[in-house]
Image (tube, rainbow, N blue to C red; front, side):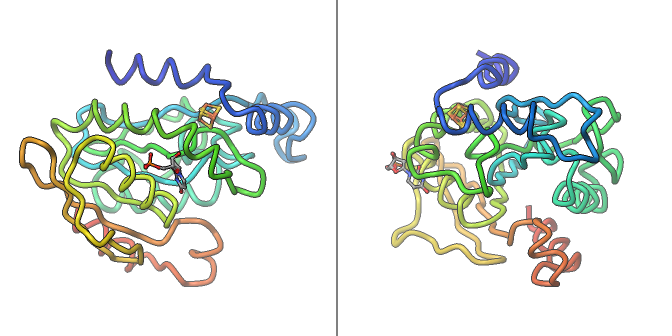
Length: 226
Ligand code: DU
Ligand code: SF4
């Protein structure tokens, strides 16, 4: 199995009834007026980026009118505009903008994934939905582990999902459990003794970037540690 096989499997997953309903209803009758003439993806969103990445970015879940529309992680909303601009400044992205799957954007050294692959109502997945989707993240870690050097968790949900997945994979996780905050760092250890650096950042959502809770300088500093 390759990362492409994994992505193919993910995009046809229907394991969470509430999320299947929501992702599809947004994509049909619930489109935002400004996108009403566009096709919506309306399915689970696959990981995006470099299959040989040394850095894995773990977000939260697709946005209803962002990745649930364009079919690509963080593509087509303000969070993504802000994230990809940062990845471009750091040299990971081939261009600073992202608007659709065919826009030419490529990531080098970075792969973007999420602990929940379907857009949840109010951006809030339930505990059951997080645990139902967790095996996809486990497989992502398994397949990227050989080259992985660091993981950037965007927000508390991503941070917790990575720690849980790391434990399930048999990685060493510091005890007590490392706490999430912006700039938090924890050393995870693979079974073959390699250290993987987990770094936390406030999520790149508008709530944080419009209010100045997360500034470009703060984000650039975190990216520089990956
Ligand atoms: O398998 P585990 O990592 O020990 O997680 C226990 C249980 O809680 C599992 O069903 C996942 C779920 N879970 C989660 O994955 N993420 C959360 O934020 C909260 C609960
Ligand atoms: Fe499947 Fe994950 Fe979507 Fe649930 S959230 S339907 S587990 S891809």
